[in-house]
Image (cartoon, rainbow, N blue to C red):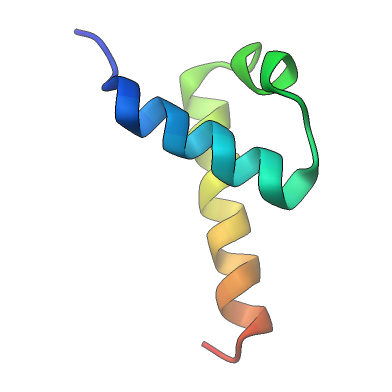
Length: 51
């Protein structure tokens, strides 16, 4: 099973934007770890916007 290319690029852009990490650093993460960072960022963003 492969991970959708569009979804992968979305996660990379999201983590890079919020954590200021480079593409290589993000791609070095395991899929599960990258998803956890993206979910954590989403919680931080929601909390920061009062949601």
